Image 1 (cartoon, one colour):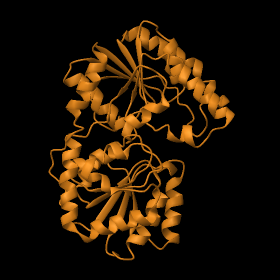
Image 2: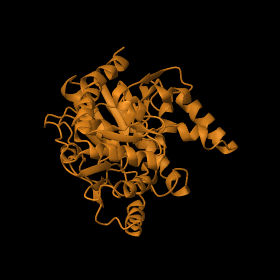
Image 3: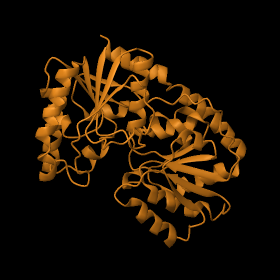
Image 4: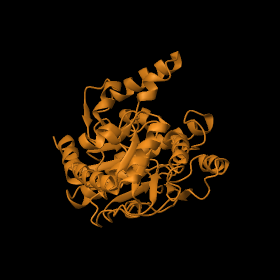
Length: 367
């Protein structure tokens, strides 16, 4: 089996990059498949997550300007080269499947290139706001065009059942992200530290987290919050200004990135998530795999499909800062509750183990 993955880059420490590395490594090592990954803007940088030496890495050096729309003139004029290199690569490799991972201009063009090759499109973000927040005529046409393109793919892969209502393609499979197989032991949950992680961007809602944390430390001033992640369009600076304005300099830290977030998680007692939307957050599975209790907004559409049964009470009403702070305070107060939720969290994470996820991929590819 020959698989060609297409994505923008692999040098950032994001969830998509993490999931792609896990899948590609598994396919190469366990299934002995011929795996290639084509990037458009790797910029001669090393992949952030380790990749199997048998995986063929290719970069076509398109380098879109991510500060502008893909449909800006600056980016559109790069499309001909992109399509030429993409077509040439597919013709050379002759893959059985081309799997588009990130979302870029190739989404609109890939179904019409190399007609003998099957095309799969993965979606890693929620469409909730596309359908419920912006109902302008322009948005409706945008969604119609996307639906037309999506029907040209052989299959769409989405991450949770709640997203299925937003797609019209009949060939849809639901394959969740995998939890890492962490063998380093569980977190002891005895430090007075909590953490959050993710791209430092507005959609992650770290401003709401800081506001909630200000309520928490009125009762638990000895506890601290660390936020891990790579800055996106200057969001870190705005958060730092918020931290200073609220007098939280000694209580909240922006930690930047870390090469091994899962091992880092062992040093904390809680994981917090205040995103505006999440599809199937890999970072929640990573936290739960080491036994970290998670407190999360019940945001559209992903966390509810991870925080199952007994864990569900750790979902708080979406964007409700006060309830969120109260739930965090409850767990800070009770180590026994943290240990109980931590044990449950590890059991839940095992339900999303890598072997199970990859069998679902294999079932969709080997037909």
